Length: 307
Image: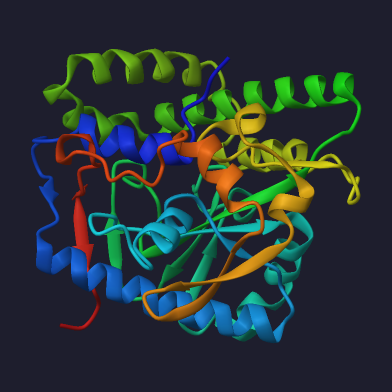
C-alpha cells in the first residue's frame, strides 16, 4: 500500500493543479524573495541547533542544491531538514523559548488540523498556502523537517513495523483528503486523473471520519517512532519522499554529518550524501534536468508579511 509522501505530494500538487482557478505560479521576483526569506529562517534555526547541540542535516533537494549549486536549486522554493527523533524531541522542549517569538512548530502531534506526517516550522505573520494547506490554521512560509526514526535490525520486525507505518500513513492521507474535500474539490476540475485519485482517497477517508484528523495523526507518529533502538544499524524516514522502505539508510550515513555551504551559509549534510542522493534521485543526480521535468511553483496565497 503506497501513500503519497511529502516530497511526492508537493510535486504532485505543483504539476497536477497547474491552471486551476484561483492559483498562480511564482514569478522570478516572488521566488527569489521566498528563497531569501527561507535562508534567513535557516540561519535562525542553525544558530539554535548549534547552541542547543541539536543534530541536523539538510535534507532531500536542499542537499542536492548544496552539492550541485552551492545553494538553492535555482527553481526550488523550499528548504528541507533531517533530524533524528531524539533531537527533534529536544527541539520540541526548547522551541517556544528559543524560537516561539517568530515561528510556530507544526506537526502531527501538535493538533490544529495539521494532518501531515512531516514537521514544519512556519514564520509568523506570513502566508504560503498550497493545496495540502487549504484548511490549515497555520499557513506561514515554512521549512520542512523530516524525522529520522529508528528501525529494527531484525528483518521480520522491520517488515511488520514498516508495513504498519505504510498502512497508517496512507489512511492518514485519505482522512486528510476527506477533511479537505470541500475546499479541495474546486481545484480538481483541471485534471481528471488527479480528480479520480483524490476522489478515491476521499471515499476511503470518509470511512474513518469517526476519528478526528488530529487524533489519527498522533497515532501515526506513535507508530512511526515506536522503535527505541538508538544503536540499530539502520534508520528510516517514514514521512519522506519514498516512505519507510524506500528511505532506509545506514545510521552511520545519516546520523553523522559533514560540512557544506548553502548560499554562503555553513551547513551540515549527511556523511553518506552520495548514497542518499542516489537513493532519492538516481545515479545521475548531478545532472541538471530539462526545463519540462522541473517542478512547477504554484500557490493559492503568498504574503511576506508587512509590505
